[in-house]
Length: 636
Image 1 (cartoon, rainbow, N blue to C red):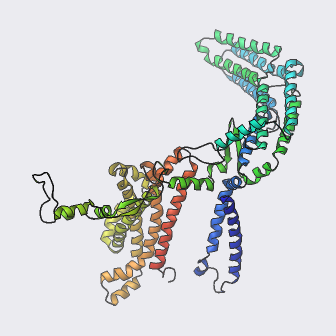
Image 2 (image 1 turned 180 degrees about the vertical axis):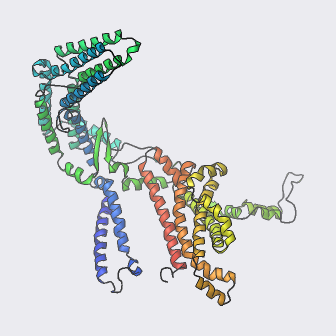
Image 3 (image 1 turned 45 degrees about the vertical axis):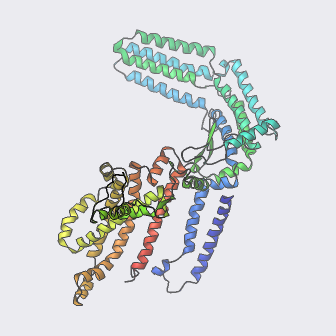
């Protein structure tokens, strides 16, 4: 129901925003000409249109619209898929799905193989002429077995009767299939089927973060589905019976036995020096056996069977009714297919999870009781403020206080003193009050990126400014920076993780390396790009070096620095996920890596969405900072 409402809202939002945008264009100022930056500002309605179109495409190509408006369509298409799967083997014999008869294709293919082998035998110089003649005679005999299978007069009467029986069965099935009450299910059988279908679940992803239930329910949930399932079972029986038939009349059997015996005798008479002749004789036998196993019949024998299959195919398509249009319109780039007893999504709906399933999975991953590997994506835990104070304050504060730490007395008790109380405060060994602190996979990744980025800014910006203003600094540090900067972060990851460990220290240091080089380059470019006229003007007004740096060079470098921060954010996220892929027990990258092993597409898309939203959050925050700190950018 929610997906239906969202779909309608999306349509209304797209249409409404487009109409509003057209109305707004008519009321624009005349001076808002093409190329004016003011013209590109605002446009929230176009943001809504873009976001709505993306969501609508996702709903459509993930088949969530089909699931919402026709929730039982997948189950019915599953039963149709069973019919098509049973028909496929029979259709394969005739020019229905293929361009020609299966028998024709086999005969053409094996004739090519026979001619190719005969040519190879003639051109082989390492075998004797008498062996060549023997092998060529066997080739001719093998080729002559084909007319024994395609001759209508040699077809055994038993096979004719069996083919007619199968044809009549399909014709009878076609008549029964069109009846409303087919297959004649009793009330008890219907009740049992409905109960089993309820236990099986509905269409879509469900289960825990690791365990997954059936993708498409295979037990029929509707009368139409039951009809197709019953027909599929009958067709499967007919198909199995047909492929048990072998058009092996006595003349063919004798000819094949003669070829097989001659080849066996011929190969037994050859010595070890005649391996090539033995291999060629074996190839002849392979061709003869392929002809034996193939379902080759006289050209007119299966005409009745073909007509009955075509008739049933037409009827079953007609009986699908509106389901065919649902399949065509609401299942783009694929459909529901059957393979044996199970059904699955084949197409974009398979690798593109449905928004509704993704949302349900996301809610499950948020719950502390479920989470992912017993850790929620994002939650909170109550932490005593004393632990935060203990983390911030260094322990050596207590060490520098005069006096000694308390020693136990004769009664075996330890009386605290001022020095020990200060130590308790510095180590957080006291109780205050608790506050909620974020936790979970998302928080761990966010904190790693934030700390790596902040450390890169703190150390990279001053060094970059120094390199942009001092020839010694540029000459000394430039080779060191350019030596490691071009190396991909993933090349550093194994080394850093092996040295610093798989915990947060290694990952944060790797992110620091990524952001550090970017911030140095951007700060250096900003400092060296300051206009000399501004610096000369500052000197003429009597400004000191610090004042020039504070009020001239740094403000002029801010656009480059903040642009570098935006680039560093994206690089840090990409590097973090790769690092968590390699080693980690928490974080977005870790979640995606485990989900990949279990083919949990919903979880993979959740991690992609979360990373995108976190990156967008960083970027939007940085845009606000840019607007506040450098409002003059683009207006000079």
